[in-house]
Image 1: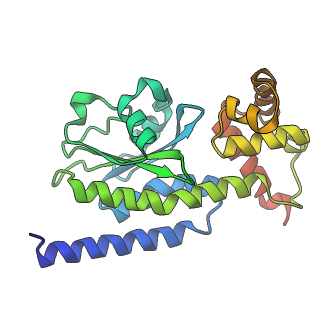
Image 2: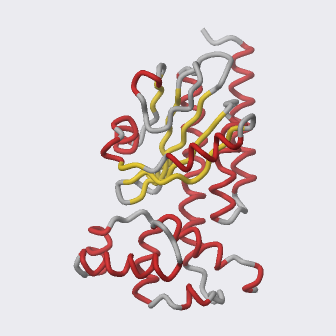
Length: 251
């Protein structure tokens, strides 16, 4: 039976999720990704949170929050790049589009082992009908995570998913924006490929959409990474977004 105190706490946390979403709405892509795990941790009363993007069947690190140990958070993000096929827990969450509560995450060793005794929650960001990112959270101390914690993190992820999707698209599709030299060097077809990359499409999906071969798509992707000086697809999208929204470029 739910007690009045429990109901009050749940209502407060739901309010905090909505307030966090409102703070995220105006952010551009790079700032949105950096801020998202911070807002998730605070709204869901977690100590740590990690955001990984799902790109081409890979998990690509985006940002992490650990208020007590920010250096550790940065290290987790750096080490978090992996193939989705090698991460069964993450693959299950991404495939079903439903959250997961892992009571003893040290035993099953998901990709991101935050290290606390409270368990681990993983929630998918799904939009419009595919998982575009995964959000992890745990507590260093305090009560173990339960089903309510899992559902609240999922509620946050569901609220944040369209913001991440739209910010990504807006970052590479603003008509009339002046482009920096590297971005200006992209051909119209490369911009099309970059836009589809931002939507999370893999090479095969891009090839179908553009009616070209996967080999051609791979060539376009290599050229995009080279021209933007990016190490991977997600970095290319984020870097292009920062260029487009740089104050030096004007409105």
